[in-house]
Image 1 (cartoon, rainbow, N blue to C red):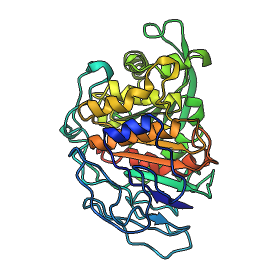
Image 2: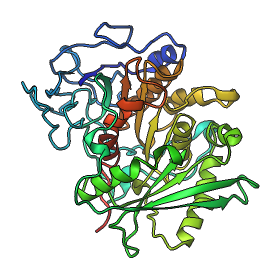
Image 3: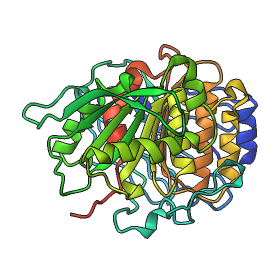
Image 4: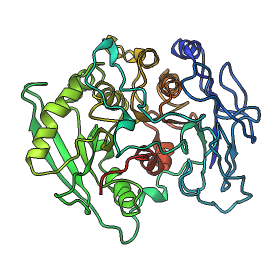
Length: 413
């Protein structure tokens, strides 16, 4: 497997071009306006939030990783490992931006303030929902830029990487349910069959971290394995995961694609009190809460955190539908992010050249906007063989993506 990091200048003109469809995802080392690909080299980038461009690597371009080898670049003071002449599948050093034979430290942008040091983001429409700066809590620290940046993942793709196989001897968590939950206030008359993953290490006396996963059935076969492995090796906190499908296929777009705080209200006002009422001890710390989802579930996950930044700081999406589905305005999120104060969010995005038309540019625009604001963000994309949802490319990165997502969270002992 090879991995290219793409340097992406970030400003409002770039976002306008991306939103207008003028920039297409490049699948080779040729360059297009505002997105160039190089090989090797290192450089320094301006600090995020200066009003200029944030680049992945200057002069020498982005790092290239050959099969089994590792490479890194130094950007804004964040140094990566030197190239390794390995053909045997060298693993990434601890804390770098890749897993297995892919160790992509190149592509991290320049030094950034604490995620959220400038305060919580302003939701679309100017409404606010409190807001907790990331640096204001002793449980959240800036973990550095390892793994941040834009990464082009090239074939061969492995659909069942080692990280999606439970390691021998790790404690195995339990998946409970599905249990039917009937909404009474937010979506009256709709029911949601919810499953709950509870790690083996969970103890009721200690609040667990939380992940809320949209389209739960898509993920319930993968996330428990990833969490069992990561929790056992100390790379993720003890996390209770709620797998929540849409109530019905017909109502999915209404629940997920609507750009508002309504779905977040459903989670906060109805689902979490119900789960806590069953006796589960879940942290109220936003640094210890994450949301995830694919496609429309991806934009729903982002909306939860965007409108509830005092409750959720972490988001993982794949093929997020940041598009104007049914006139709901998801395509305006990048400019909304750019025009709002810096949010406390840490966000993972993925797409591909084989994604639905416009999805690659839409997800790149989201990554570009958050990077420009100084947020820790990671964006991976694959070639035209990778379908909507990420397929084998996403599976290959998912264990590391989950580890990356939880970096900087230091729960109280």
